[in-house]
Image 1: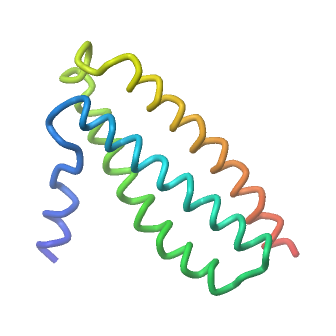
Image 2: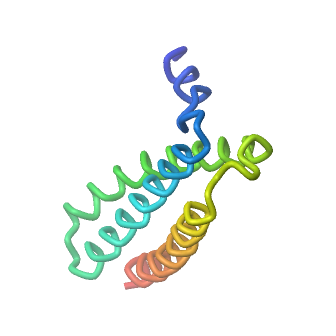
Amino acid sequence: MADTKSAETSSILPQDPDEAARLMIRITDELSALLQREADAVAMQDIMALTLCGNEKEKAADIYARAAKELQDRIPQFKGRIGTDLLNRLEDAQITLGEVSRANLETLNKYHKA
C-alpha cells in the first residue's frame, strides 16, 4: 500500500521545463492514440481489443492526470522558460486529446445503446 502512495506522489515530469513539456506532449499523444484505438475496436466490434484498450486507457489516463496536475502546479516555475514551439505543440496535443476524447465518448455511447 505504501508503494502505491509513494508512486502517486512521486514526480512524473523532469525538472527541466523543456523536457517536462516534451514528456507531457508524449503522454498526451499516447493517450490520444489509445483513445483512437479504443474507438476503432468499438467500430470493428473487437471485444478483445476493446478490453485491452480499456485496461491500458485506465493506466494512461491516470499517468496523464497526474502529469497534468504536476505541470499545472509547476506553472510558476515554467513561466518564460519553455520555448514557444513547445508550448504550441503542447497546446495542439491538448486540443487533439479533447477532440479524440469527445469522438471516443460518442462512439462508446453508440456502442452501449446498441
